[in-house]
Amino acid sequence: MIEMIKERLREEIKASGLTTVEIARRVGISPEMVTQYMTTKKLPKLDTFARICKELDLSADYILNLKDE
Image 1 (tube, rainbow, N blue to C red):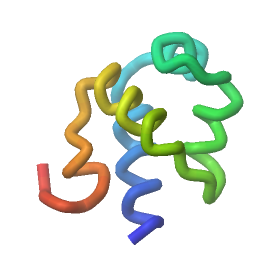
Image 2: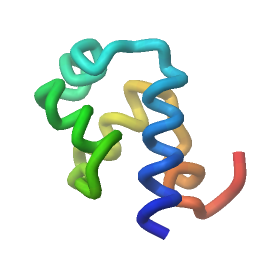
Image 3: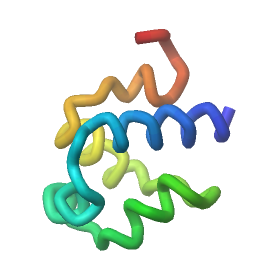
Image 4: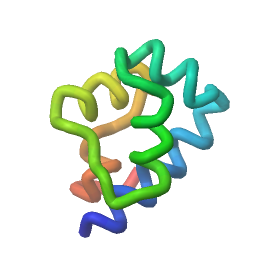
């Protein structure tokens, strides 16, 4: 389950066309944190996850594997 969340989040971040710096600035975190969410087992805190979804216009249900897109 966690790997699916990580994979979907990683795919959507890459598909956004934004750099990690741009995403970090919009969400209020460091670019290193964005990179960690994409490359390590680290998952964002719930409030950070919500901001990422909002800023990138993502469905949290899709990322959390609660429904297919």
